[in-house]
Length: 188
Image (cartoon, rainbow, N blue to C red; front, side, top):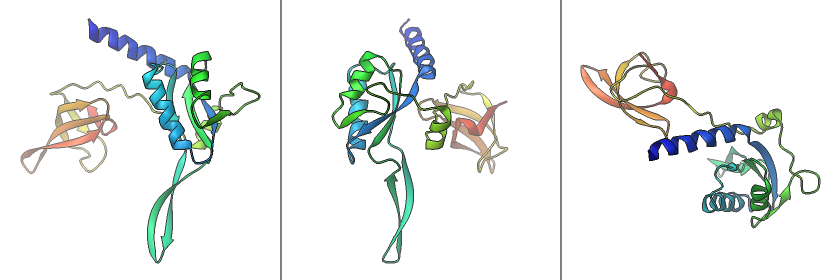
């Protein structure tokens, strides 16, 4: 009976996540990662995972050349800002607004204004797509992309959290276990 309740709660959370919007939060410059960590910790501690879903500090990678050596580094796209996917209610607004390092939401007065879909896309915020996979152990699959493309195999195990599946494929007359992304396989 417990697993059924857990599934209902997950489905409820998925439905609420669809209703959530992205908001921009202004922080002290240089405190973006601390604010992100603090919000995530408070959401977990206060059981607000059904109101605040994701916290992002938008960054980009760049190549720096020093003394003839190239180094890949990361920099913040918008110093002083954090983007939060949430459903705004009194409790979630209070939690984010009163996080150490936060100066407020972007919007008139104290009213947060959600980003439009076009703004979210322009920021490069990747929506996490829930993948519904209809696989179970011992299912026959065909690999549709990657180095094992067009190989046939048998599912050994499925890792929902990592969105990975381990498949035995026949290579050179031997069964070899390979780990693939959900998108790389299709059920036969």
